[in-house]
Image 1 (cartoon, rainbow, N blue to C red):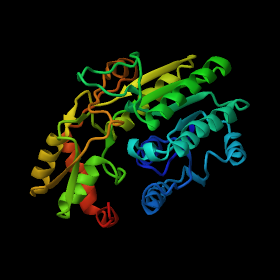
Image 2 (cartoon, rainbow, N blue to C red; image 1 turned 60 degrees about the horizontal axis):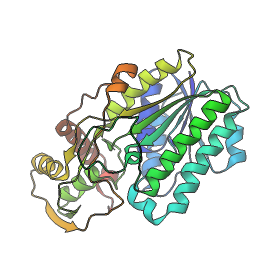
Image 3 (cartoon, rainbow, N blue to C red; image 1 turned 90 degrees about the vertical axis):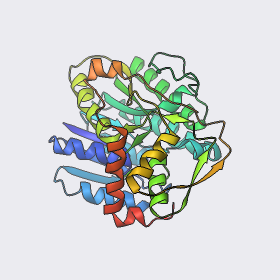
Image 4 (spheres, rainbow, N blue to C red; image 1 turned 180 degrees about the horizontal axis):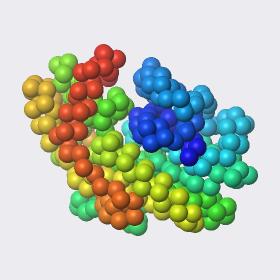
Length: 325
């Protein structure tokens, strides 16, 4: 297949492209190298992907509609849309930028596909669309969504945009609600990498609240495997709009994460506490049974092993362990 991947230089984008290239697909990747974190890391990801002869890269911002349309005329078999601004905390401070990048950018992409033959789309959404989960019940895809942050609002808006295009223009759409993805090459602002870096370098780690908040952490290797089932489903030539949780089905507390890091790094963390943010969910927990049933998705990585793999990457990559986080 010839696949367009937006946001290919990012954490998830790199791993998805790498997996698809190994499977023999041809990939056109676009990214604007947004400086929300180290552009060098993103450039390194592209450099590693360009070792494949079937990878083609174009530096492009999806907000540039005319330049985007020139890319979209190639009639791809599939578009995997990962581009956009990530992160709950930053979205609170920069809501207008998030609306532009995530909602307007997504509309540019989908509207630009109307007059092409491309009809298959996989969109990266987020567990942030669910909002808070105070009772730690596993969130199913059909529950009422109440996002707390501008980031979550933009992701839900994109889901609804895609639904309208599915109904009006016969697009086939798969929505993936990713839950706290982690692993090698993860963003430096994400908890597991940030904690590993700071503990390794004897810097304090900051806990918002009392350490009892929890997340459904999903290893990047499990995430990429979910794309194989998604592609198989789309290849059945069905007229579909489907939403799936891509998660581990386990909610791990911050305290538990710190215990694992303490054991892996052989160091006692220096901990500082700050007031929790009301726009961040206290708990996330997803139900992946629909993805298991329809995509063959099953998360197999334990939190301990996943953190160990991330730690190995930090230790083995000088740039990842020399940044100021």
